[in-house]
Length: 280
Image: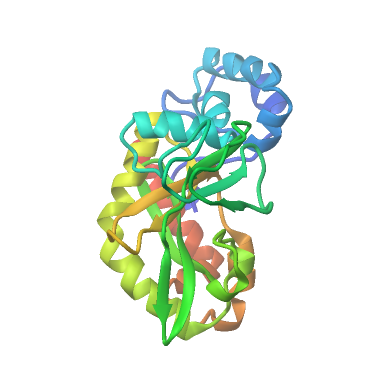
């Protein structure tokens, strides 16, 4: 799709790109592709910094840099950095909880069991501990913990949609795999929590981009039932959410974000947003 808009686009290894020599254009961009959790878990190996240095010397503007991955790959660091930048996030807790219930997660991991701790609990500061945000919303008499996922490039939102988990499961942590392919539930949550909050979603996307750079992000947002405000639960570097597409396939034709299920439509919007955000 970038090629159709007159923007040359290729997928190469870093060695192949470096071997070509100087960037072919003054507005040449390189979007690095690696897993931020693996990067942080491996102790932030210096190889990436060496690649970045060579590519910058050759004239490329870089996205998905190690500096952003270092923040995104550790939830504690992410909360501290983005909160300081003005991005609304749950309050980070250390030492001992006060009078608030605690949401406790592993700091450098994904899709793992979380703990909900009572007020006054002694906290393990190696974990990611925050105040528990009430995200319970009812749909047709059923109660769900809800999060919103927004795929963004820099400050621009490609698409946003709801994810949810039945409260009866006893776990406030919400992932794509927990979300029922129930059109009535998805449509109701989308209409009530995504559509009216587009400006809040855009503000959070802009704040993250200004703090960490222009990258592809998957922002997980908490719609607080008490205040109506959105808080950023966490973000990660992600080009696309294929798991959600697969999960919602049974309702794809009527899903409120039907464009997610058409690869050409999704790629066309992504290309336009990349061009607009980078000035290509």
